[in-house]
Length: 127
Length: 107
Image (cartoon, rainbow over the protein chains, first blue to last red):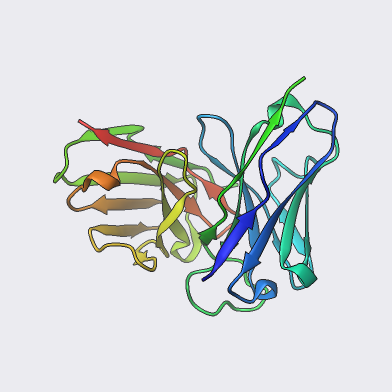
């Protein structure tokens, strides 16, 4: 079964750092881009960026460039989203998702929808 | 950045009725790289339609997508109780962006 399993909920204070994870299984992790999506409480979906675990090529939304860091460790089929200094406005649900359409992907091609999603990680930042 | 607008914001319908959801892009979406997702409360989004009109694996045929260029439509031919949810469009042809969503609720 193809799945993405995310790390558990986090409660942090402003100024703290955080790294959340997304572990893939049931498919060739290095051959599919992984994306991250933010959903603030009661709001819509926001695309943050993507990473190609095969070589860690990364693309960011202009809205999130410099605010977060996306990384991956292909040896353990895991992608990460991290903050160096959290703010209260980072309180949200974060989803990882695989970019694909059910077919074998073209290497390095990222014009795909998000076909497999993690269960989400809630991040709460409060003093 | 391509901006997506969805209408209506909320659609109130009864089970068995037809739902028509609209997604308009600020500029042409290349190669019809337009997807639709369904999200229910407390759940992750689920891919319904990609390439503007292709159904994802396991999606019932009451869901259909159409359109090209800047105007796209998701149609649910006969609403089932489990279809009441929020629907998002997404373009993935120029970076990626999501629309603000349309909530389909029970009338």
